[in-house]
Length: 313
Image 1 (tube, rainbow, N blue to C red):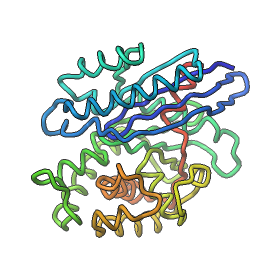
Image 2 (cartoon, one colour):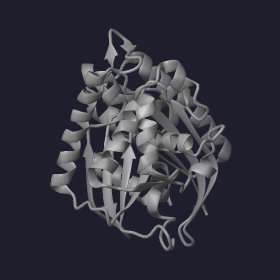
Image 3 (cartoon, one colour):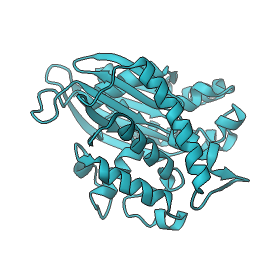
């Protein structure tokens, strides 16, 4: 066993996994798995820069994670940064801050690298599952981008598009610092058009058909799953490998798009940091399923974090 620490810093959240990994058995034993909403990508789509308060929120989370890594005695640490830090002019400020706190330099990875990590994390334990056979289409709906990966034992094709729950919300639903409550029909149509443009790019470059098993990752997908399952509180064990039909995804998306901030916040499985962006994230998920005619989605709690951990092992 090798004790590893993986950190994934995206547009909306930063997450930590400390685990014991055994490459010979394929076993990954969680010791600490946590998530903090930091909204690092706040305003990046508009300004091209990481905001000072967003950086400070992220650095505060890094300090907490550094303490946990030290407490558990992780032998190897890897910090991966995704969409927001790829886009920012001042990403050097972010890189230096993380290095000062954690002692490791964040790797600002490409969309293709992000896709490969996500695929490994999501599918490694599905191999041999009688009801969830490959090949797979893994979708990772993040804050600033969505990754699409097709593969079975390994990645066959991957594509990243600049469509995510935070990016769509900030681009179409934020006016004078306020989020539409709820979105108007015109705003929803504008988001749909943006998503469709991205999905058309995927169609042109990737072999996707209904014969694939659709596997969904990240907070928008797991939150929709939690609502579909009627959970009283967020339960990762119940959500992991749940299978949510398209009809449920569509009904939940329509409910979220017509809900006010207060109504969304009152949903028991809703993380406070997702209240303003969940409607856009659910719409991305619904349109992906609609675009290729998927009847259901398999939801995975194992994702890019697990892929990063395996890369260390």
